[in-house]
Image (tube, rainbow, N blue to C red; front, side, top):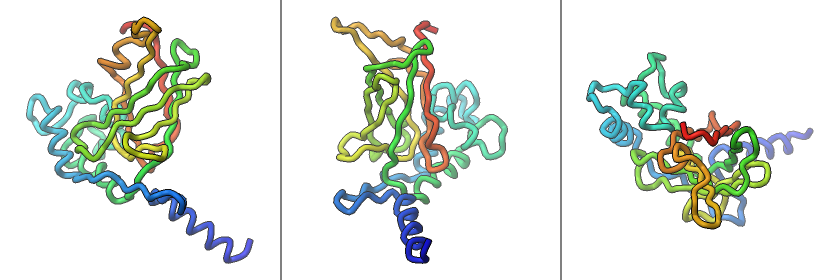
Length: 206
């Protein structure tokens, strides 16, 4: 492989890392985010006992934070402080990734869930620049996502609640409320945490 080819590959890798799109498509900028302000809002929303930490009970109110505890919890005490939240959110700003192609696989009672509408809802404390994304599962249970207002597929780095809905012709919801109106599902999308999104749903109400 020639030196020119190596340089070309390096430039392509750099473009992908910062979220650039091909020349015939507009570049997607990363959502505006203030890590310190977002961390403060997260504590105001979820720190019910006002002790300065989010414990296991409080984290259960935020499925995305709960699912991403390992990445946020720098001192490994099982709780989150505002400083820990701010530090992790700052990696989104530092990496400046505008949009990442994102897919997730869904099963219901161990079978692929086909024809379900999946909505990714950003945590409100991230701020208004973060938008919802939606996708519909295919025959294999896989969904690819597109963010509201964007012309290209993908989702911004962030923390998302996951709502899964599939209705019969009469409008009856076929998916338990714990996966939509009262969802317990959430995840973090980040440069170092972007693969292996898989959700195993059960038809049991609890």
